[in-house]
Length: 280
Image 1: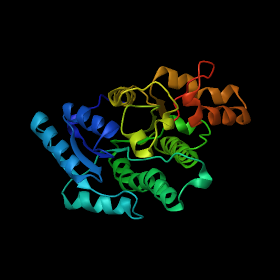
Image 2 (image 1 turned 45 degrees about the vertical axis):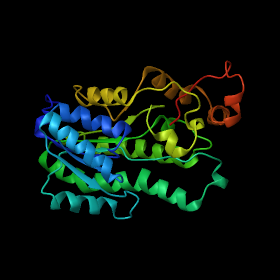
Image 3 (image 1 turned 90 degrees about the horizontal axis):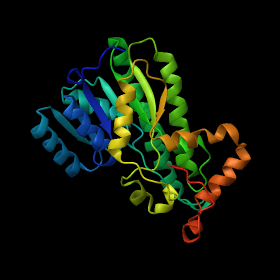
Image 4 (image 1 turned 180 degrees about the vertical axis):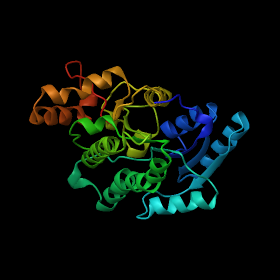
């Protein structure tokens, strides 16, 4: 792909108020991109927007929106149009997980999880990708997870949602690969963000070694800037090794292994004989 001039882009980032989303915002503002930041927490968004505008002289629009709405994509497109902005890059980063046996989870919470983790990125991609393809330029990054590569007991809906995001994005990559638009899925493993706090337990990352949000963003931007970006990229060498387990173990074996790894009781036992995997 041609050298990427970030100053030519206005980039939409969802889930931008903290963690990986905020790290993307800072990295892209440093490179000269104008931004549209989306999250529920308006106070954090506005503080980040002011910080980036002052530090880098870019234009940052903050839009507070709940992406769990059935009309999330069209509502967001309307809000961006009303602000007079034209998006040329999209990073679908917003998402959250729940932890516990599926039969114990509240149906309403699971529906919200599916709406934010699946429906929103599909609808937002649908809202903005056609314009980028028509222009023959831009990029779409959908944030999946290491949870996309294996069954994820106690996070069954989250893992299933991220597997959907991975498959969906890789399919769209194939459909658009000659369009001039770069499309790929980004899969972080355990990352030092607010993910566990939202889930409500550190068991969600199964004791895995944490990467930083900046590590994840560096991996994504290196992939974006590469000569011929593939349909997906995994952050971290150990995570890439873990993703290959599915190629050598049976589905039965890997599901049983992941069930052990996500067992809260194992955090109180010796785990020296249990391999560490980065699930979310």
